[in-house]
Amino acid sequence: MYWLCDVYVDPAYRAQGVGKKLIATITGHPDYRNLFGILATRDAHGLYEQFGFVRDHGKTLTRTPDFLRK
Image (cartoon, rainbow, N blue to C red; front, side):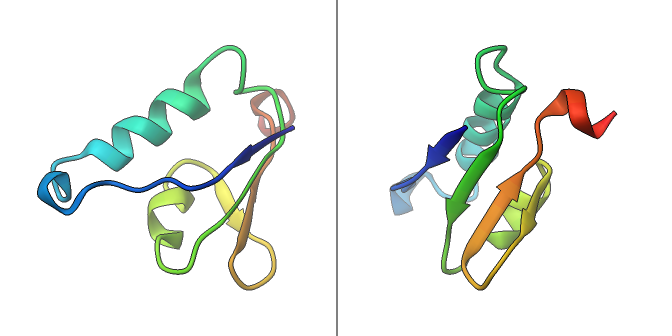
């Protein structure tokens, strides 16, 4: 299992794909793609949902390992 926390993109670099690249790199990395992922966010649910995270309760999202999603 991994816990993704304290992700922050500097305002000067927002809307340039930095957040998407970061999450794509993490969720696609061999060390992490077959682990359960968990995170909490106040306002970026849509970003994480694009990469397989599902809203759990309120601010919490989880991601099922790739091998269980196929």
